[in-house]
Structures are given as C-alpha cells and as structure tokens.
Amino acid sequence: MSALRIFALLAGLALAVPALAEPSQWRGEWPKTDFSRSAVPFDEILSGGPPKDGIPALDSARMIPAGSETRLADAEPVMVLELDGQRPRAWPIRYLMWHEIVNDEVGGLPVAVTYCPLCNTGIIFDRRLGGRVLSFGVSGKLRHSDMIMYDRQSESWWQQALGEGIVGAMTGERLTQLPGWMESWGAFRARNPDGLVMDEPDWPRSYGRNPYAGYDSLARPFLYNGEMPPHGIEPLSRVVRVGNRAWPLDRIARARELTEAGVTITWSAGQASALDTGSIANGRDVGNIRVRDASTGRDLVHDLAFAFAFHAFYPNGKWMLGP
View 1 (cartoon, rainbow, N blue to C red):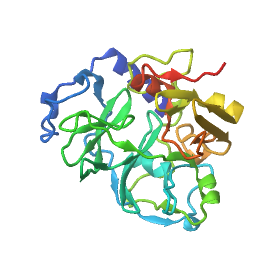
View 2: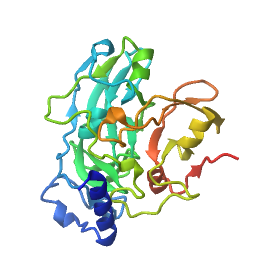
View 3: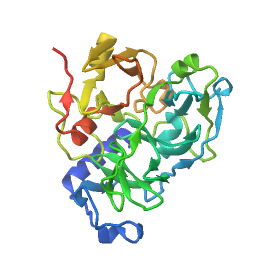
C-alpha cells in the first residue's frame, strides 16, 4: 500500500475513533511532567505513532562551509537564519524531515530549529527562557496534526506551531521566534557563498527521501479532526503567516510581490516541495518567499504553514485574500 493511501486510511480512523487521551496512561512514559497544569483539553492530543524520542532530536549540529556541500540539489529546501554579525546558516529539510528538532547555537545564541512535516511549519526559536536555556525533544504526540515538543528540563509539552507551553510546569510560557525562513539551497548558497550548512547527521536514515510522499496533495490532513479553512481554501495549500494574518501562497506567486498591512512579501521560483514526491529534490516547485517590514526592509518573523494549521491555531486570524 502506498504511503498516500496509508495516510488517508489513518486520517479516516482518527476521525472515527475517539482519542484515548488520559494522563494516567502517559505518566509511565512521562514521570516528570506535571499533568495538573494544562492549557488545552487532553482529548485534543493524539499519538502520532512514534514514542517519546522515537523521532530523535539532534544536538549541536556539525556545520560545514556552503562551498563544501555536494549532496544537496539546488531546489531542496533549507531553514535559514541570518543574524547580524554571524555567518549565515542553513539547516536542510532533508535532515529535519527525520529529526524535526535541532538544538543548536549561533554565535552563542541557543536556538531550536524545528520542522513539523504534517503542518509544514518550519520555525526557529530562541531556547532561552526566564534565565534558563532549554533543550527540546520530540514527544511523539500531536495536536491539530502539529508536533508537540517537550523540554528536557521539566518535560513540559510545547506546541511547535505556537512556541507555547501547553502541558506541565511551563504551561502558558512562550518561546521567542526568530526571523528565520525556508528557501532553496541554491538561493541560500548564491547569496551566502561563505555561509555554513548543517552536515549530514550520523544516523541510519534515508536522508533526501520524503517518507510522506504525496502528503501535500491529500484532501485532508493526517490525524486532524478540526475545522477546515474557510473561503474554499484547500486544507493542504500553503499560506504565509505573519502574526495572525495569512496570505495564500498562490496569491503571492501570481503577484510576485505584495505589500499589505505593513508587510512586503516577495516570491521567486526555485524551491521544491519537501512533501510531494518520494525524493525531496524532485518535488514540484512551490517557490521561495521573503517576508520583510515594508518600512525598514528587515526580515520579519513568519512561517509557511498549511492552511488548516493556520485556521486551527489562529481561528480568529485574518485571511489576506485580496480585493
């Protein structure tokens, strides 16, 4: 059976069978988590399949010069962070697809580079909070099809799409999102020939392969039973989220550049969808975006999520559909 059909079957089962979400069933695996504190109903939390750390987060990724990297195709997506005074860095999605979190440092700044394939949310967070430096792992749990991370210090659970603590001692805390973005390896390397890129991890994984082949062509998301987006927007179409606003990617691609609500978003061809074909490099072209403050030109915090995820986490958000 193809991965596409398996996803469709499991998504249907998730709708038909209520989740068995009960802290008493979780305490054996999570003895340090304070389940008396929660910001969300437990019945919204599902198992994604793997257990705690079944998807292994990485620590202190090896970086190599961009000019030394020969494995990445130009169209492959990478997560990018360009901070003033630091060499630009890229973390390939071909590695994040299998690890979802990289705990790293950029010029002494502790960062968590995160990617949830089921929501297409690639977000880079500052790991500092209240005088502590947190490190994160993958819980194996999902809420609204989005990865639930956990911090290794308190084993609190965090919603990746929001950077918000939702269960445990850190409930209600928020991580600071950094102005990173997803773009093609070719675009990053051309702009930053002296930049750094994450080297291949020492794990037995099929790096470069997409285990979710066909996912972003499904009619419904995996393990999601929430409300679908309004305005006839396809659930697995991409949107650019800035704050509580979302611009459909196809609208930006048609315009090539939009300036609205104090934000300028540009689009250019050349980035492969990581969630299309079995080979990430061969995914259809979804293009590169850049999101800047319309007045200053500085890069803005944003993410490139699936439409259903924006609607799930920003139910009162504004859809920027144009005139």
